Every structure is written in C-alpha cells, then in structure tokens.
Length: 370
Image (tube, rainbow, N blue to C red; front, side, top):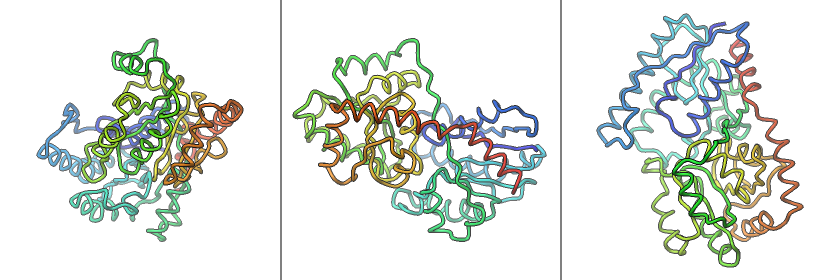
C-alpha cells in the first residue's frame, strides 16, 4: 500500500502540529516497510526563514499555503500513485487526487472558540477546509474528548471519525545546556521551581496560574519557569495580559520567562523541576503531560477537556477557575513526598499508553480499511 503524507508543516509549523507530524513520519519510517511505502510530499519552502513576517508576508504565506493544498498537493499525490493521502493539519485538498483522504483534527477549538480566529481565517476554514473534511474518507482525533466535540458539531462524521492516541515528543538529553538554557539556569539560582511548557494563548490560562502562584510564592521558596512564548496570533494571544499580571503581582524575580528552548534544554528542565502545572482551559490532547510523566515529574492538571482523559490517575486535579484548589495542589506537589512518589510511579505507567509505534499501526489499519 502506498501512503502519501503531506510533510510541508515540517518546515513551517512550530508547535504541537509540528511535533505530531515529525513524530508520525519518524515512526512510519522506523516501521519495517513490508506492506507499505511512505511517500513524503513536501515543497514550497519559501518563507521558512522569516522569523517575524509582516502583514504582507503573512498574507503571501497564506496564499502559498492555499496554492500548495488545493493545486500542487493533489497533483503531486496523483503523480505519486498513492492510494491514501494523510494530512495532519486539518487541511485536505478539495480536488480529487487519486487517493483516499485521511485528515487529522487535533481539536474542535475552531468550532468551540471561533472568537480566537480572524475573520479571513474563519472564511477560509468554512469555505474550503470544512467542505474538504466532509469529503474525507476518515477523520482522526487524538482523544475521545476531541472526537465528542467534533461529533457535537458534525454528527454526520460518526461513521468516519476515529480516535487514535498519539505519542509524546522525543526529547534527547543534551550533553550540556545551550547558552539560552544556561541563562535560565542562572536565573533559577538553584531555587526549586514549578514548570509550565506551552504557547501564550488565552486557552492556556496562564494569568490564572500566575495569580495563584503569587499567593503561594509569598509564603514559600519557589519559582515558576514558563517555557514558551507568543504565537503572534492576535485573536488568541494572551502575552499582554501575562506580562501585566507579572508586573501587577510583582513576580519579575519569581517567574522566569525562558521563551522557546532546544529539546535538550527542555529535557533538562523537565528533570530538574519540582512539579509540572497544567492550568489549561482547552486541550485536544496535552503533549506536555506525557513528556512530564516520562521524565519522572509529578503533575497537577486542570480538570478540563482532554486532560483527565490523557493523565488518568497519574495527576492531581483542580478546577481551572478555583485558586484555592490549585494552591492545595501546589502545596502537595512541593512537600508531600508520598504523593509525589505515587504520582511519579503512576506517571511512568500512564506514559506507556501513548506510543507512536501503536499510533502508526492504527493509521495503517485505518488506511487499509477506507
């Protein structure tokens, strides 16, 4: 069976969708290729060197994406002789491409929170992305929560919607910290710290975390390390409120803003943190949960969306609007050694449920059945 996969996002995406595509492709190639041939379809790399594109450049990049998805990709797929085309970024070509089509919807955020998206993108999504998804042979969701939200909006997808759990990002332990990592380490000053990894989006609920942390840190020796930064998406970005909260609660010496770090640095800080805090209001999966589990880091998580499904019994939970619950979890995370040990052990076991090798096998089974 010849399976084509759109790998354009390996050059363009920077967050969870990039991780998903990269790890899926690596797992496909790592599998003994007795019964399948993987065809990577990529191209149109112009713009990958633009660190902060302006408005005109962003519009041009969107136009190039449209051309790639709706014109170049179907032609490339047809010429490749692929029997199945997989797109992991919500977007399929509308035109026939000589292959059955499988698309991954990582969540239903577009439908549940349309205010997070600009009007041109809403128009593009509704006029092109959704019609293409309706014609797909199969739609894949990474969690039962995401599948249920998609079915809430599109009951007609029930026969073709499949839940396939993904795996974590593979984080190699670096021989030494990078310059950026060393800078963060110096700012921590060997003080215990809680960790949060993720973009500065509104759904991540970081201002809530900061307000609760300001109360907790006033009576405890602890810092908070935020690894991540703004996505530059105006409608969903929360950077301004995050910075205002840090200033308002005088947290500049207690909250470390690391920006994005290398995978080796990230692995180091997962191992060194006292605990991981995940206050998000909306997640289709929650990759950092599995990353924390794999590094033996105890986790406290919001009791919201897909997070309890993915973390299972391996996390302490709090209402993402209740500061007192989060403060209680912080106390246990820092000082209750029996709970810490229990969470670490359960975390290692929970992480075993999510493997890219299993994800790939389910994709192949799905591709053979559509």
